[in-house]
Length: 240
Image (cartoon, rainbow, N blue to C red):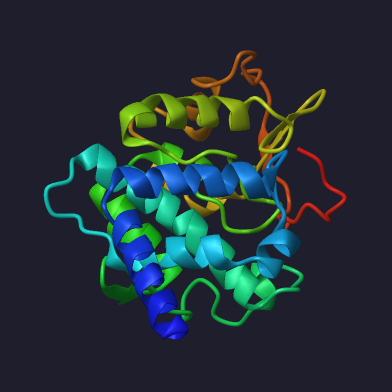
């Protein structure tokens, strides 16, 4: 009987979380609890994974019917970041995502009752529906080289402002853009996804400068610095 009540309780919680606004509220609560200064407290999550597991169940059961584009975009962003955390927890402790075979292109996750990989969620669903280069600064792949993860959920009601502020924050720090005396070093992200940032009228430098308070000097060549794939854990010595 006890197990029946536990099962019923989990079902009701999952149904509640799959109902839309509640998913964003619970994601916000989870991130506020476990994210500190752009890093994730994986150890505390691994010891008490219930909240994360409920969110993962709600991602699997989430209903897109009747939702707005803003709700869908916010849902997919939060889903990606939470599913990354879940795959890390499933293999914790670990040195980082690249230490887990098939982390991005083989491990299966369930989103809105569909089985897929993280790469498929990112490239074939999120970017296909919403080709917004700024998404590269809100999606967090569990590595130190990724943008610092936000300690809040992305919300449909304030999504545009949240993404804009996050992009400005990332591109005005030394983490993604490092201006030296005679050259500027930029994240490998701008190399991997160059076609997302470049148009007929905009190159990578112009794209970055559109968000910076102090522009990269015109005479500065851009160079790519190595990507740090170590885990974005609060135990890490790195500080954003």
